[in-house]
Image 1 (tube, helix red, strand yellow):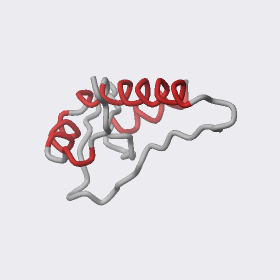
Image 2 (image 1 turned 120 degrees about the vertical axis):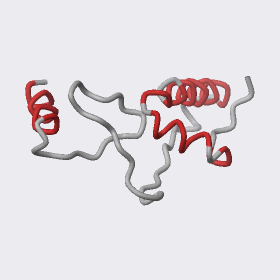
Image 3 (image 1 turned 30 degrees about the horizontal axis):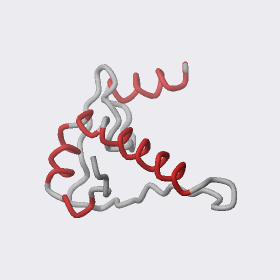
Length: 95
């Protein structure tokens, strides 16, 4: 935990920058800014052993993962705007 605080202290002092997840909340004294354009794309993959995890349980895990991600989209206003502009990337989730 001390390393993490020192990491943010360096950023807040203007002595460092860091990559972060777009859903990360800002740390005190720092701001999150997007890179120009869409240079970094990634997928979050959920994998399970079909022989060990029944399909209904896998569906529950998927829904929980989607809801956890969606609960954090508003942590960063830039990410919220990016997310809203790309509905084709949103996960399928029937409410």
